Image 1 (cartoon, rainbow, N blue to C red):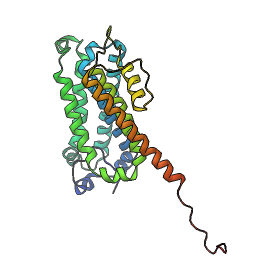
Image 2: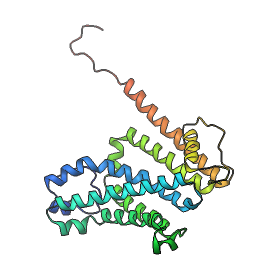
Image 3: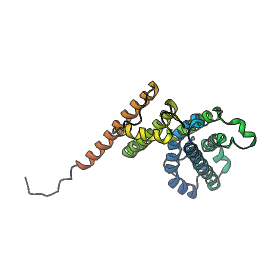
Image 4: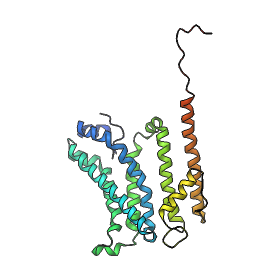
Amino acid sequence: MTVGLSWGMAHAPANEACYMTPALARWRKYTDWPLMALAVGSLPVLLVEVVRDSLPRSDRLFIDLVNLVVLVAFAADYIVEITYASNRRLYARSEYLSLLVVAAQGVAMVPSLAAFGVLRTLRGVRMFRLLAIITRAAAIGGTASRGGRAMIREHAAGIAFGAATLTWITSAAAFTVAEDVGVGRRIHSFFDALWWSLGTITTAGSGDIYPITTAGRVIGGFTLIIGISTFALVTAKIAQFLLRAEPAVSGSDEP
């Protein structure tokens, strides 16, 4: 049974058929896309973890909230899927990337717990944050690789908007790492970086926030190019829809 892009799919369709049930197929039908959007969209927030100690409390709370939502969503998804699977042992072997995403997100939560007891010594240690970024990026890349070309052809406009949104958040995260962002610094918070990224990707600009480092300017140029390309694609799709020729009326006597 084909159910679209199956989350955690790193296996052949024959393996999937061995544990697929109608209930699991229905569950994936409604959860695959939201989970993919949540996973990919939250990756840039993990990048901000690298400099979280210098950010204001509101930014740190936002990062912790995103990590918690992703952890709960994917842990719940894995529990439901393995419950619905007809062969749970085969499911666990085949869908190891799903469990890897949950484990990576658990690692991402470790720095948030540093204030409790023995974990206090982990505050400021970047190894756990970098490990979470690398692990989850690898897991998501594996799940998204299957059927990617067909998905892009079928949902070009939607993917363009998704790419623009991902670029907006990613650019803000990279800007936060590259520029002087933090409490008492030139730029106060990650949310200010989001404002800069929005103005850059839409080519509107604001002038109140701007990069001064080489890395920040490269990030700004990349964001600008993606914004122009994305909106050009969307404009082309709209024009194609509006200019689509109506089918000729059969049997017309007009010349």
